[in-house]
Length: 64
Image (cartoon, rainbow, N blue to C red):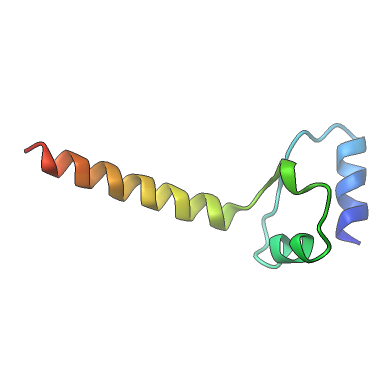
């Protein structure tokens, strides 16, 4: 069902899919969806932003 809905969104012009519910990314991974390359996993994006922020803060502190 998720793959079908993704296909419809792309057909309507979506260039990227935001997987806003935490169960959607694992579900699309489980079926090896062809839409994964254009999918944005917000949990992963948030985790990466936290790591980036921590690394920047650590670098800034090292320059004091």
